[in-house]
Length: 277
Image (tube, rainbow, N blue to C red; front, side, top):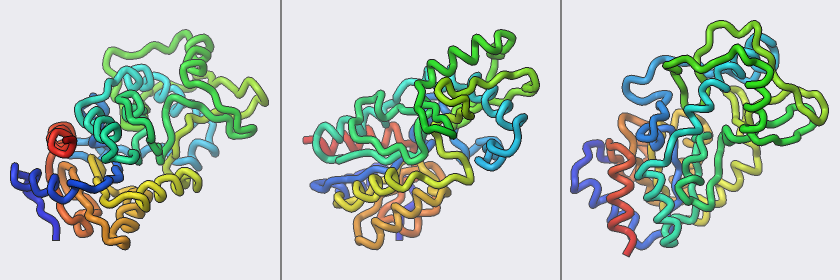
């Protein structure tokens, strides 16, 4: 049964559980809130239904709305900086304690913080994929094309962004979406939309990280998405210690060896300071 109240004693208990073990790490949107990127499900988060893959494919106006909002949100999204939680995990990797990080985030902050082995379960916002030929493009190049094709589109003073880099835009009918420069096909940010599956090879890489570790640390995830809870269940079946750090309940609490109801920045920083000797 997991503990729910976080004190210095519970942080010490988490450190005792993880000490002298290799620790696979699974992160969610909660680790990036201190970088200014909101959480879908955290306390105070507005109700929001992200666009599904079927909507994106099936309706031109939905694609325009998504691309216009994603473009406006991307500039602020990409300006976010890694926080203490990201840096703590990078330090733990350098120390040989964390073999790699599995993340449900698309913000790229783990890589920018210095983590070298990162499995982005849901993709990354800095790449764009052609749905017809599979060509991959740098997001900055596509953003430059969008600016050229839509000179009327300017970023409002206040843009509400989401964990997937999207933003709310009202008038999208005039928006022009660039086509693939190779085959003329439709472009999509290289992220997993609602209704899509995590690419099998990517999920297998995540499974391998959990299989090769002695413990699992979940940081900043409510584990509401199936891919995350499957990895927690994998760890449980292997009887690995599972430590969950998240503000609020998660779907993995009943499976956790220890649950810390706490922010990730300060908690991961304290863990790294104690575990790196």
